[in-house]
Image (cartoon, rainbow, N blue to C red; front, top):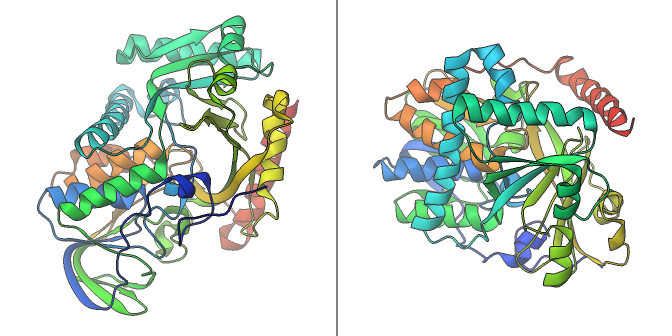
Length: 430
């Protein structure tokens, strides 16, 4: 049985059922002025709003639905170190200086999360520990080399390698041959976190409008951002809609591809059974191309994400879809009831690195976090605030990552992506 959503206006999920309702923000009606108008009230938009408001800027945030409605309120809640691409590979492609600067920003992203939780007293169930679980012996070499590289070249001491036996002791599954614990990573309740940051942004002076989908954007000085019932004139515009931005800005649309992830939450397992699955309480993600990711919640459920689909058409039963991935890892849970199941879009890039940059004459954007958005959106929001304030050196570290458009144009790029994903999904099984 899948439980209903009790948090009005949000997609049904365990997150929505266990988060506070949050402040209801008004619909934009009439004309507003602001130094900065932000499109999207997810992690990126709320992070940028909070940083900008703290600097004294007048900020308006326009959200089509509710704060945290998209991926920011539905994701796996995992916080890791670095990016999707290994730091060794980034150093080879970008050079030591650029790669090192990226690592510093990634570490700062984790610090921002810790600081926000502590300063604003956000009750979001933070727990340390992020475990990469290897499904193949051939992956163990590069996992260990990356840990050694980060230790030797970047001074990072948070990684700890696990043998097959140690991995089996940590996670009650026979799927893995070893792994790597990241003591500097962890997991949280993402909807609680984004709602807490939104409250902090409003206290700092930002204005948030919900139910205010942006329909038109006219660049200029000032720019005009229009909804069905109002408009905002602003000196700067920040596009933070990610996979939900649609075709509002064609110049960046082709650099990302929306995909759909699916997540379930089991019935409460009790503390003893939950700890028997993941001894330390860390979150776990696998080396599969179509990644499994899971963790135990504060109320001792297993929250499990697995499988991807590439169509906007909703699954009839996302719980049944994800359950088979869960049972591949934990067959001992065959008797367990599924209480919640949900889906949500995220955006990937060709390189799996975030796509951050400027739009002339007075725009900024951040998108395509490719599954690493919980942390990287936090530093992206801070760097956008710095760039608006006129200090762009650190912003340019992220903006300097080159990004190719997905091949095939608007008509063919989605079918080509599906073919590519199916190929890599087949490799997972071989």
